[in-house]
Image 1 (cartoon, rainbow, N blue to C red):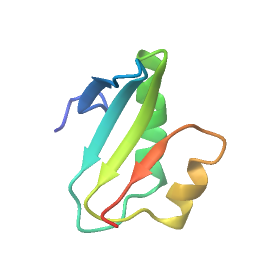
Image 2 (cartoon, helix red, strand yellow):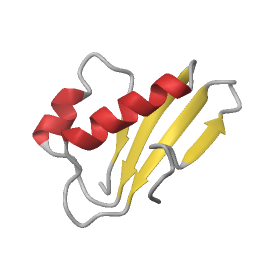
Image 3 (cartoon, rainbow, N blue to C red):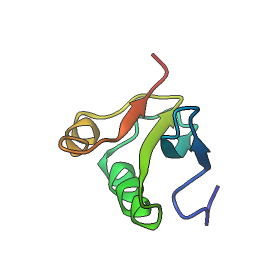
Image 4 (cartoon, rainbow, N blue to C red):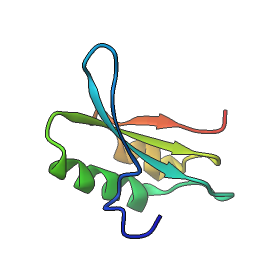
Length: 77
């Protein structure tokens, strides 16, 4: 959804861990710009962990962009 501030879902696990989730329903692989967008959006949600879910896959640069972060990537596989 456009204008969502980079976050589609705000969730709290039973353990108390907090998440913000960005969903991408794409046929093409998600790239590093989308990773950077989610990392930027996380600044508005202190204490939350980022999750990016896609119906496609992730490019190599996208996976590299998550190095050193706590982002969770979930793809169709």
